[in-house]
Image (tube, rainbow, N blue to C red; front, side):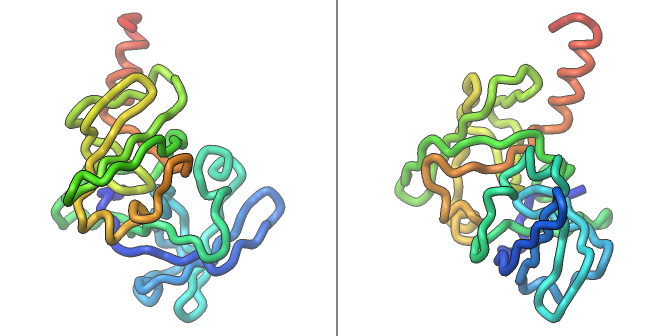
Length: 198
């Protein structure tokens, strides 16, 4: 379980194809605090640390993960948002994030709002992919509040701190991001569907 509050960025230093899987070697300032078998969210994708070598650590993304996320777009030198699993005795500053990406979305618009930024994202038309204004959404692992909720599209407002300390400073229109919709909304949708109300 995660909160969507990004701790730091990690640099992809090596990508190794391993049958249908992909091994990622990541350089990060939190590597010295990690241990093997620990969960770390990479652009919102929960992956397990399987090896550590000085300031580098390795995680493996299986084929299903590569098909559903933007990890298969990564190249050497790219950066990813990193967050370690939440502590149960700490404040939940973001929202409940599982690290289980639902789908990808495409950045459709970026605008400078004189002190903040607005980003718009478009996603595929699937009934359970629901956003609501002022509801929670996770973009590449970042816990955010939906500003505008539209059919197959939503927008978020980004403050300077988030812009400077996450991948948001690098996003351009047509970039692909990972999306995790609010888990409570997904459960409500499933219950209503089972009851035949939608």
